[in-house]
Image (cartoon, rainbow, N blue to C red; front, side, top):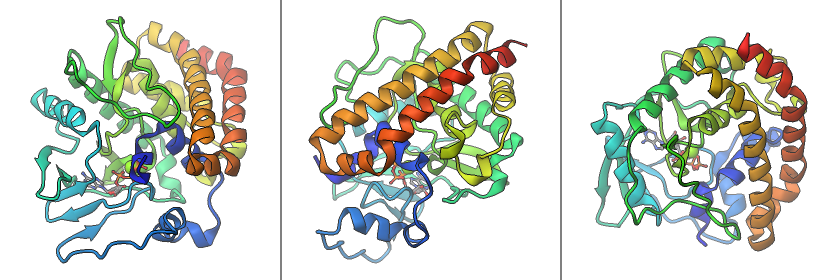
Length: 313
Ligand SMILES: Nc1ncnc2c1ncn2[C@@H]1O[C@H](COP(=O)(O)OP(=O)(O)OP(=O)(O)O)[C@@H](O)[C@H]1O
Ligand SMILES: [Mg+2]
């Protein structure tokens, strides 16, 4: 498996991003962090006209060329391009436009203007108006995704050593983004305005996709694992705010916390399987995933009644 494919793993991404903030020397230099992963490889020279884009530092080789972004093509890229094309046709324009492939075989996407927050997240990203705007953005995405039938030969991303589970037979399924970490949200004027990095998009339910967003942004993690800006927030209030802005139904509100608990349990299972087969995952696991995810699971279990009560008030 190529290291670039790590970016397809929600389990890895989730764990890495929600762990304790990296040591300052690593945190301030994302490229050094990436070099840590790729220490045995000499980075290729950057051709003129190409500007490297480094988000969470997981996917090597992402560059900006004019108004486009070039990313390594992966087995699921054609499926994701079909999805992005559907979103646009359905009126959702706050995502990259798929523009095919370049002469190096890289995927080409439109560059989405705005700012992507970097770690450590600034305090303003914990504002309630941010949460409300994100909820409305995701609601529009979900409504646009509604009714899209993935092609029969659709390919989705997955972790090494773990099957890519695609739920089926549920009319409530939509293809959701499934990776609403801060590095995948483009802000304009201080508010979420667009989503990028659809590598983990896959059939899911609205509720589970919402749980993913809330995992990062409520957040649904043990306080000891939260970023400083998010450490002391009133999480039940924030979940209820999100639900109101999204327009969640009573049934969706009742289903949210069980879905969040199941989602975090899946992160843990998949991460453990991947750690057994892949050395990089093994390192993520040892560096914190093995403790952080059970802590999140326990916190969600213990907070579920309080949050659901607030949601149904
Ligand atoms: N279409 C786009 N428009 C604007 N900026 C983009 C776009 N795609 C990527 N970027 C920028 O490049 C960064 C890295 O891209 P991306 O999120 O796709 O990869 P990654 O963060 O390495 O992967 P992952 O999030 O899966 O770990 C983003 O945080 C963003 O700043
Ligand atoms: Mg990203």
